[in-house]
Image (cartoon, rainbow, N blue to C red; front, side):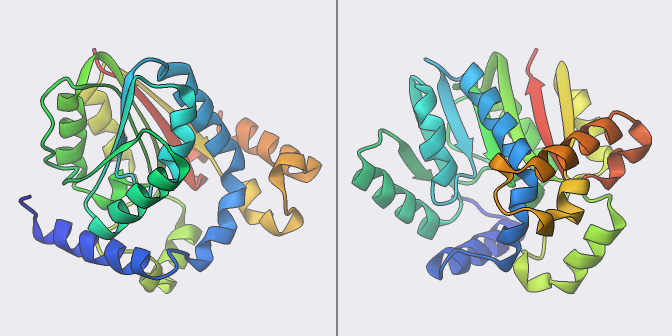
Length: 247
């Protein structure tokens, strides 16, 4: 497996992370994105039944294990971290899940072209060389195939300040999405849909504990939905849901 210097740094970072508890203090904020993950899973379940599916940068397989409930014909997970893949394989075996896990380089995988109907991932593309990885995903997708990803935005100045203050929580080469990255996506894929999440739900996350049953969260989520209808406010979002179709 041929790796660039950036690939090696990412592998070492995630091997170290998964060799420990695999937990970061920032995880407490992710409840602010409850509706994002809900929409993400719904999009996947609508598109993967009886399809060949790839979890692109699967980590320890936590997401893969949920997606397999959508009854794909075949589901494969790849990750550059051998420690993560070892843990994923062990978990799948213990749960009797039919998931194939492979240590591989997402930027230059060993799969044949047009192998998958759907490729998905959560928080992976911003760890990679975006232009290389997007082209690789396009290569791996069949005609009319879809890529469905959750990625962080790099446009909210307050969030960026927090990122600079907590460098140990992220790898050196992380690069949350900017406008130019979306423009590149539009040059590669025939259909590109971007949905924005996480402003009021993030700022006021301390007002609720369980977003699924919280009226406060529903109100904050509604305010986000209204605000992000206007392009001028989209830069304030924390994360996006990317849904692209290969023509």
